[in-house]
Image (cartoon, rainbow, N blue to C red):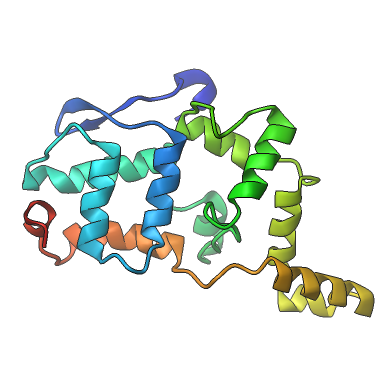
Length: 206
């Protein structure tokens, strides 16, 4: 789906019907942070995901897998589950070294400084937000922090002593707490229904 040609979707097709979906960037952030929350079990994440994106709908159990697929399609901004680079190389993509929770101030400042967008007041579609997020200038403090976190040991070993000391210091300063893998959790959400799991827990509360 092409953002420039097709516009911004506000609904998805589920069981042959157009169903409204919550398009707010805040919902997308809440969804991603929820997926990384180790205190929630899989079924709780599944129920919460459906409530976040489809607050006005109560899906029949046989439709839930299709609803999950639709919300993941929307969350991925119309893309499939893996990037072109990943499918060609056969290697799994690494999670971007950022956190909407821990980097909130830096992300807010980056949007305000780069685009003049006040995220505390803005009403952005999730796809708009992600397009802007992926295009943040490298000279913003947020992208510098992401750059520090992205330097691996092999790259670090090729740097001068002063560079290594600086990067290591910055990595410690801006280190993120250990978190679950985004892509794995996204896959798990789908597999809850596709392979095993107890779909009745979605509506019964466990």
